[in-house]
Length: 136
View (tube, rainbow, N blue to C red):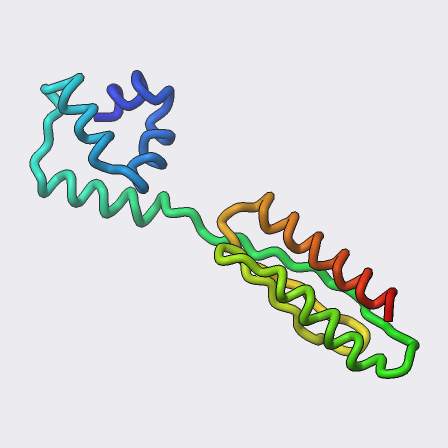
């Protein structure tokens, strides 16, 4: 089965990644183009189970350490509001969490499957905290 995948997808690894999201299209393609590689359902199920377990992407953890200080009146409240503002930037696929390590050190974290999206969101959260803290 590997050789037909190399022919159609450039590399079997690419086909296996596609198989995680749409397995039937790959199996249909193989049985249509190469009938000699037709498989039983039990073999398909075992192969798909193993590929799904090994090829499912793992979430990436992104962390940024920031120092937040505010020398105005109600500084603690201003910092809390800035932290809430950063957390409000969360999306469904990328949740932003701000936690206190030891004052004035805070950690902004997220977990995502999309590296660029996560980095951009954490960067935006850092900028929003800086801007919010500067105006208070």
